[in-house]
Each structure stands twice: as structure tokens, then as C-alpha cells.
Amino acid sequence: MAVKGDVKNGLIQFAEKSREELIETILKQQERIQELEKKLREKEQAEMRRRELKFARLEARRKRQQKPGRKPGHAGVTRLKPKQIDRVIEQTLDECPDCHGALSASQEVIEHTQEDIIPARVEVTVFKKHRYFCKRCGKIVTAPYASDEVPHGTIGPNALIHMAILKYHHALPGAKIMELFYELASFRISEGAIQQALQRLAEWLKVEAHVILEAIRESPHIYIDETGWKINGKGHWLWAFVSERLAYYQIEKSRGSKVPKQIIPTDYGGVLITDFYAAYNKLPGKKQKCLVHLLREMKSCYEKNETKEFLQYYKQLKRIIQDALRLDRKRGEIPKESFLSRVVKLKKRLLAWSTRSYEDKHLKRLSDRFLKHWFDLVTFLEEPGISFNNNLCERQIRPNVIIRNRSYQNRSQNGASAHEVLMSLLQTLRLQRQSPVTFLKQAYLAHRQGNPAPLLSL
Image (cartoon, rainbow, N blue to C red; front, side, top):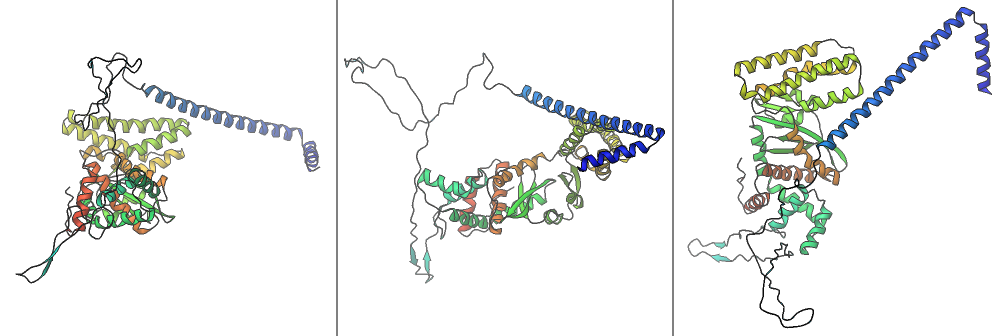
């Protein structure tokens, strides 16, 4: 009934208008229809372009994929034969398995080499330290600790170190480690005992992590990034400070600049490679903003925007960045004076792009950002050995992200502290191509047996 009333009222109003007013109303409605049709066409074109770009990416990815295995005509590759043979088993026959007839002497020997893992077992060791009375000193003296003895510890160093590697490198939760130890070696341990053991291990290895922190502070360039983390369900942030040979992690409740300020010295004179997060702007030293983040964001805006203005200046900005990357690849081929002159020209082009007046909202946002950071986009050209991206730090954060996706992160501050120490040591040792098992066992036993000096040399 309400609809019929509205229609009736509309017809009455329509009948009361003059001929000129009706013509004007019809013209306005036609303009409105044309405007809506134009918007619809633009929306359909944008959607079609988005699909074309998606299809092009999928097609490019498909073309890049190679067929598994070697190309036809190439020799095949099999597992290398072991150099050491631990046992040999001879399989012989006394009679024919078909007719039970007599057999001649062996005509040929077919060899088959097989590698396997010997099932592990728990080794229980009792350390007996004898005590003596010294006739000269008049004191009771005790025999020293054995080389692989953990003072007052009931879990041996091999089990402890492999727990740490399974948790912090292979990202296995405590329940899986507990199951694995029992299935492989019949070693019984509770999930809670694993967590407590790892926290004690980290406490003894803090002195080694401090060595990494001091080395990071003296590094000529540092890659920094952060990712979400939780302690007992509450939001925190895991910060990563990385170089080509070092990785240091810190878990804090804050995402503000006060966290990296605790790590980076106030008189730091090196280069910080970061993304465009504002907390990094207040840090000392030179900056290199990640161009990969920038290119990714530009491409995202490009897929959403098809205005003539955006396309024009997007291509111009992309050309500037590509010229910078191309110049970096030619560093050794161009005379130093000419190279520095081109760097200055690139900076001027970036500044000119940043100070231009734009109508498009995406261009306005990018130009405001560049106006703040245009001098931080080409530092990699002025400082040899500096990367134009923050990929190294993102790769070192990735193991933490995997752990985050498979667990509740940490349930206590002690667990978070253990994560900081053990993850810093494991990732640093792997960056330096050292054996984590060998070093962690050696350092842990040394510290537990009374040697406080760090063993890590960087």
C-alpha cells in the first residue's frame, strides 16, 4: 500500500509541473543515467583489467616452471654410493630354489648398497666424582666434572640441544618433540619439562646472545623488521636486527621507536635498511628504504587505478627506480665521478616527482611519502655493499612466522626470553655456516661447569 501511495504522489507532482520543468527533469535524469552508465563501464573495465593482470601473472608463473628431472639425453643422477661400509651380508644358496638340484660355484655377485638409521636408545650415565684429602693443604678436594656432564642436571646435553633445534629450527611444538623422542629412542619426558629445560638452557646461553647484540651494534649496516607475536595471548612484537652474518631477536610489547633505540647506539654511523614504517625515521645513522616494498605498493595502486594522470606518473616513477637499479648493476663499469653525477641526477628526479602537485589520491600519498624519504631511496648507490631491499631481514623473520603459525608463541615472559636467546644463536650460527649442535653443546657445558666467558667469536 505504501508503494502505491508513493507512485500516486509522484504522478500528482509530475502532472503539476510545466512543460519546461518536465523537459528539464528529463534532461537531468538522462545526464544521471549517462553518468551511472559511465561509472558502470569504468568498473567493468577495471574488473576486466584486474582479471587480465591476474591471468598474465599466472601465465608467466606457468611459463617459468620447469619440468622435473633432467632434459632428454642427459645422463641420470642417482644417490652417491657411501665410501664407508659398516657391514656386509652375504646371501648364498645351497640348492636350486625351483627343483632343489645341486648348484655350481658362484658365477656372479650382485651388490646392493643400502643406507639406514640405527634405532636410537637412551643412554643413562652415572657420574661418580671421587673426593680426597690433601695431606699438604689439609682440604677435601673433588674430582672435576666429566667432559659431557651437566652439573645437577638430569637431562644430557645431546637431548637438550636437539630439543632446541627441533623447536626453534624445525618449528615443532613441545607435544611433537615429546612424541618424537619417545618413538625414536623410548625417551620419556613431559611437555612442561621440555619448556623448562629450554628456558634453563637459554639462561646459561644468554652470555653468547649478548655477544651477537654487541656485534650487531658495531655492524656497518643493519636490516630491521618486526612482526606480530603473543605472550600468553596478549599482543607483542618480535623485532629482528640482522646483517649478513648476524641475527638478533627481541620480543617487546611496544612497536614504537623506543625498542630499536635500545638496540641501535645513539652515535651509530652506519646504514639502516628498513621499510617505510615511521618508527624507523627517528633512529640515528643513514637510511635505505626498501624499494621492493615500494614497487609492490605501486603495483597494487596500479591495479586499482586507471586514470590517465596516475598511469603517466606511475610509469615515470617506475622508470626512475629502474634507472637506479640499472645504475647499481653498472657500478664497476662507470668512472666514479660519472657514477656520482648520475646519482645526483636521480635524486633530483625523485625530488621533482615528489614536489609535483597531483589530483589522484594515490599519487598524493606516494608523493608525500617520497618528500620525506627521497634522500633515503638511493643510499645503496652511495654506500657500496648496501642492498636496495630488506629481503634479508624478512628471510630471517620467516622461521619465527612459521613457529607463530604452529603454536601459541609463548605462554610466559621466561618462554619469550628463551625464544630470543636460542633463536638468535641458531640463526646466527646458520648464517655463519657453523654447526649449531657442536657449538651449543660446547658452550652450554662450558657455562654450566663454571666458565662464564663467551665462546662465540664473530
